[in-house]
Length: 584
Ligand SMILES: Nc1ncnc2c1ncn2[C@@H]1O[C@H](COP(=O)(O)OP(=O)(O)OP(=O)(O)O)[C@@H](O)[C@H]1O
Figure (cartoon, protein in one colour):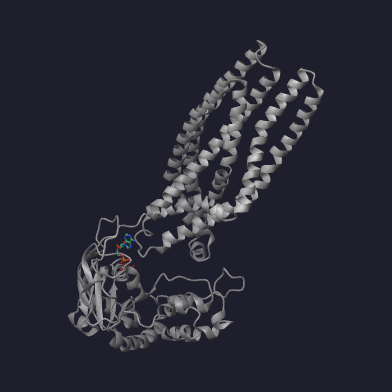
């Protein structure tokens, strides 16, 4: 509300006045009607004329004023939606960790919230109109009392309806929560069916009909769940309304009896009949407002849930200075790790040292734990047991943010930032995003200097289909840009390359790493920087100073290419298999 107020005090104040005038016009209309009818029954033409003109003016006011008031309200509500979305992005993407985003329950909550925030503006408008509603309810109450104090009980008859509405809301929210996972899965299928990247596989495997069928089936399930919830909540709400209807009928009969007995004038009976209908209208509006407020409160509670800080495992006792260089190496001591909620370890009892200045390759079969090892080094997660140390200092003692500044990485599932080529590389070091020379140097280090020559506007070329005139790149070209992005930071302590070249051909990868490894060792000698390369290509892996063969979450072997070949274990087996495949 404070946001709405700050968005334009003058406009909001004027709208609120218009809203209140419009709101009060309805009960005043009933009052003018009473005066008119009483004037007719007492044969007072002057009073009847005044009342008639008042009725006309009040109808105009009641019908028109509120429309104008809604314009600034809607504007302020949109602003609130934009602000909430910004906060949601900050909460979801701002965390230094991955644990939340890889958790399906968290993903459900974020998906629901995204949907709810889109409907937030309606609730905001209702909330801003609440003052006008309250004023018109008070005016109605005063007029009812003017006929008979007992009539003030009429709005009380609406109280059960209020409770019923609250209950109905909870029933609906529970139904929505129950169907959240299906909604998320249906959303995923919709993305699959309509976005460009999956289009090829969908067609090759002729999956379009299957995806459509599953999408329909999910929506069938969701529809059934929601309809059942809607039916339950409709029955609950109707029960509340029946109580009010009984109260209304009783009030009308009460006044009619008094009128027939001569205690009231005819106009009083008309006043109560009209006001009674208005009370019903007001109570409905109040219920609707309550419904919206409850939805908003639920959204806010969900948002608060996301705001709650993730449990901090690493409260540092004394934060040491981030080292300028690594002198000895990064050591993992008895490191084990299980993903949150998982019942098996993805890494178990890892003990190893990555020597300062070295190029370390990690090999192993799919699911062995290579990426998990890398995630711990990047501190997307902390080890479940054991420690990771840099020159003897536990990395959990460094603030995550500072550690991240000295880590750079390229991943297999790299991001295609659809901005200019300059920026898609430059975001690797935001402070230098517009530094052309830095971007060109990074691309050169990634062996991708020639790429920009092929782009129509060089580094300024907009990339991707979200631009009208954007250039679409091949998978390998996008990957080269992602590698360039990783090379933007010139003095990282840790460079992670997690299958960053899977989309490049074997020769391009070999050339890149030959050059890269040489450079990495040279830089490494100066800063102790360690390069960790995850790859399935053994022609590249053999160049590394240290090779780690991971199997089932454990380090099965560690050593140089020559020593591991001599040992004739897992590495030698995998190497020979690939070499034989290439020879044949
Ligand atoms: N976010 C996650 N939540 C739960 N378990 C996960 C998660 N990511 C990976 N795992 C599990 O951890 C184990 C190791 O996975 P990891 O991604 O480290 O393998 P990898 O060696 O990098 O495999 P690949 O060569 O296929 O990339 C696997 O059993 C996987 O199922």
